[in-house]
Length: 521
Image (cartoon, rainbow, N blue to C red; front, side):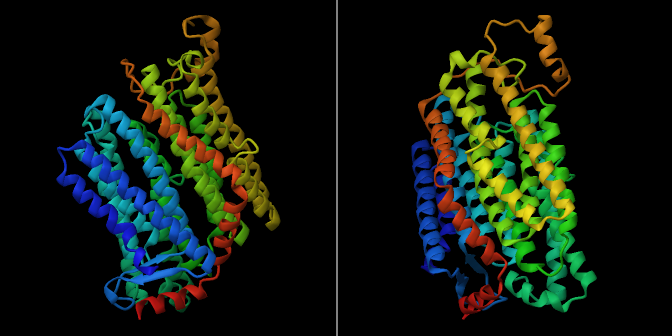
């Protein structure tokens, strides 16, 4: 079973090489990309079943080199679950992009570049999830950075280049901080292996532990778009092509959250900054959702809600009980799927209406009822209406915080409820204006101006005056993701049980130490 672990990274890299060689053969590239991601999904599902039923994580020391000299690839239930979810999302977005490429050619996402870069992005994501040491985690982040910069600037428009420059500068700052922290940890402890770090961290003075802890949290918070380090995200993601925006929103920030989970539960369990994290979580939720309420463009609304809902994950992480960690992981899975689905639905709206501005888009309920349903279901899910997974995840987080019962926990619960209500308001306002307004309604009429006047100064969409055909595969990929969001509710019980077991195991790192020692022998 251990032999399957390296395939999670090597298959996407080999697929990227084949796709690059077949640059002039679009169908070959598409086939290679689909087969590669499907194989990774199957392997990850097999590993998830193995580690969850066996009760023991898997690890492999690449090349047989002992720790700390060799690279240890480590798969527990958390890593396997996130690789499975990421593979599903990457496959759905890939099918969406295939339809877009078939309809538009190379105007928006040059296929010869897109497929190799997309698979390299997948390799970076999977590397980060199964990394057993900080340096390999850093390598995963850098693979992500290179691939995401290419994807975010596809098409070469001025707006995309400008957004790409901001994105890469911020990412490089984060990477420099991360690399400096790795160097300091190695100087202090003689290893970058995460399990060995957890063993030796107690030997350092508390002040030194705190400095190392805060440096890693700072680097990961930038990548996860935690307030006030989230300023770059709302202006970067909306400029990219629809499939790129969808996969970025669903996955890239969650890699930062994943790194924070590993840091807090394994490496610095005895050096708590939970109060700081609670304050940051509250600010991230509230500021992010207030930004969403002030927007008049669908992609920017979703980008700000993305920031605000990162706050829920930081909230659960800061509560730091097994129940809270389990709820955080469930909410993380929920958010990856739902946020991606919403961005895909907005991509359909953009093609059908020629814009993503809620001041311009109208009458879609009658013109495109299928798109209306594909937007509405994940929107109310993200807003936290029962019985959907968004409600289940939020309730679990609030329940875990209530069990702690401190005043600051009560404040965070109230903040989470307010954030959920404002999220629902922002998404349903967009639903009302875009789908229920009559298509012949004149925005110059006084009553209409009164309804949306407060949005008049909001950043305008990059207006796309040309309406484009929507291939069935794009609608099918979005519908498939909507079905996955519903499945998260239908199968919430078994999934939540898995997440609870993960939460409990993350707070018991002793068994992990022996596992990696065995992997290096």
